Image (cartoon, rainbow, N blue to C red; front, top):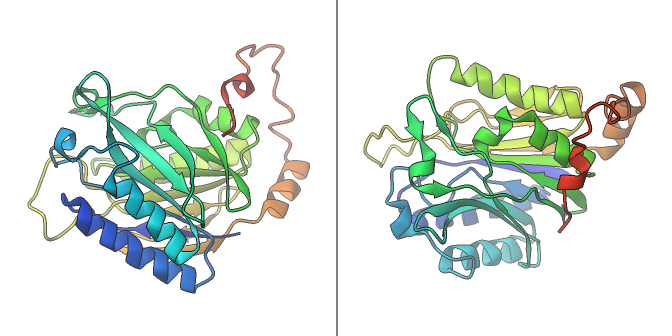
Length: 276
């Protein structure tokens, strides 16, 4: 299945970002792509007033994503800020099928309260592990900081995911880019699974900010940890093929999932992975 990574600059204006999504989706579709993954915060960059831009799933941004998917004839994974009951927002990833119907909603579980940034001040955590059928694959959902928590990726892989999608706005900093690449490859290797990670890049039309604006480095990594696509630091569209037959070959030779000792590690993550 052909997958694209839409490495976009993210504006503080949702309508600008939605136009960028439409253009990237149309370009990807013209190249035979069946699923495109966009960055964390596709709707608006983190320096925006998140409470002001937040919308329900029935709002104009999600309607625009659904229309973009249907118009291009491919599945879309993208991210927005959704009002939470306590006055904060959810950092929410949504997936739409090629007919514009919604396939999944994932609210970021692990919030980036680290390295001087406190995401939980404005963002409420989700609490559901999500796997959904999308473009012929079983897709497991993660967002940015989630990649530092291997138990989530394991739950998704053990729950039957073929592909992990990882929208991100990975913050710059000392060793941060090395962490990003290493963690994505580690999640792929230890779970013998494909990972499609799409990152933001800074928007030159926006003023400087201390909020994360992304380092790029969108990656498609195969079950042996090989980066099949690496977009580097600038805006771009990366395209690669997810081959589930390769996954089967790798798992036959390297059956690390089958060799798990669930009799010792009794917190079996498969119980926490409902399917949509």
